[in-house]
Length: 68
Image (cartoon, rainbow, N blue to C red; front, side):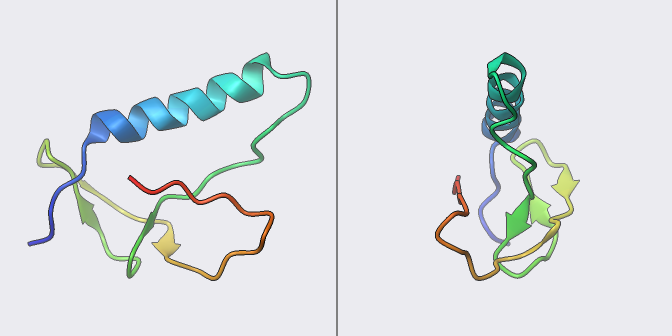
């Protein structure tokens, strides 16, 4: 089984993006997606499985990818 990820890191990252949008004069982030390498379900360290929105996709220069 692949190594599990920390849900705390995921939630804090999403909350930071949400707050940046709330505090900014304009919406900085139009949205985000949760990706896994293949698009398969990923396993968190607290034992909960989380569905990915998709697998890794080719990125444009204007895209931002944060990897945890």
